[in-house]
Length: 417
Image 1 (spheres, rainbow, N blue to C red):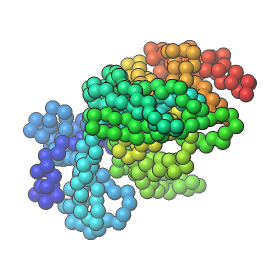
Image 2 (cartoon, helix red, strand yellow):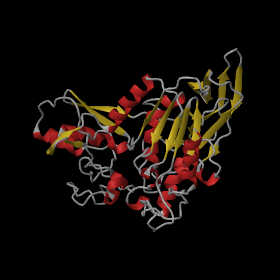
Image 3 (spheres, rainbow, N blue to C red):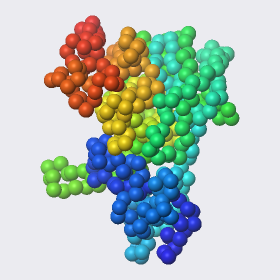
Image 4 (tube, rainbow, N blue to C red):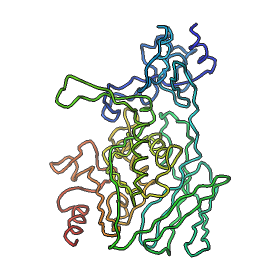
């Protein structure tokens, strides 16, 4: 047996065997990729792993997992057997591999105890601090006052079943953190900075609060879209067509994890007052692991930008998508699961309709009036006014047509500015 395979067999790794999407394709655009997202074993398993001896109850295969092919760096010379072994070990759920100078280096992905504290719903005199834990244990929030002294508040954990994993969803290295801690800090001064500290068990997290300034203040903010996070994009570099030459394709120099991380580093270095995300935040809104991946970047081990910079989120079609195959796609069940996760994570100024809070809203931030709209659906369902025929009436998304409440809100806001 090849020594590379022998070492990995001794580790007894149990990893999925993907039916990988084509270059440049996203899973949400490929409904037939249900087997890929659910870890099903393909018929062409080279070791006949469909036998009961090779497949566990979770439909994992011991023999056909593969290492992610590195996007950067020059490959050193290896034997054909070694190269073949490396190609077979491609996607790992709990462990990832990095090729460095021709050797396979085992790296453990950090397992986080939830989502670190992040800021929501900023106002001149208030802001909300949210974090998630794996257990029902209260935490404390301490706000340091500019003139000296502190304010200490205790959280009351709330179990959010919306954050459960789908029965067919493979667990990532993070356990399910479904206990929500949310504290609305009020009585603050406009245009003022406060440092804060969250104590959760033996862990301490720190951040900065900046309240909304007056209309004469200068404000810097940043907006992006289509982060479409998913853990299985790690190690995969998609292709892109060279402009003006459709027949010539190149490969991105970085995978999603590296690319998104580097972009967030740039955003953080600019110190914006807030960040807007114009939809398509995660790959599949109904898959918890895709949200886990998003928070790794924004309030986790990769970056904690959201701990000091509020994120103003708008839903895109990916946030009404349950996921491919058994995850439900755009049907009512899958879409409502996606809706529940979106609504759990975000808090925005009230729009006057409790059923649609957080899906569209207006925020006045200093001299800026920021309008966020939900454009994912139009009503009545199945008519010429329906902008998303794949979504039914069940989820109850707001209408987005002339005369609808969101359009009227936006028009009235612009007209009064």
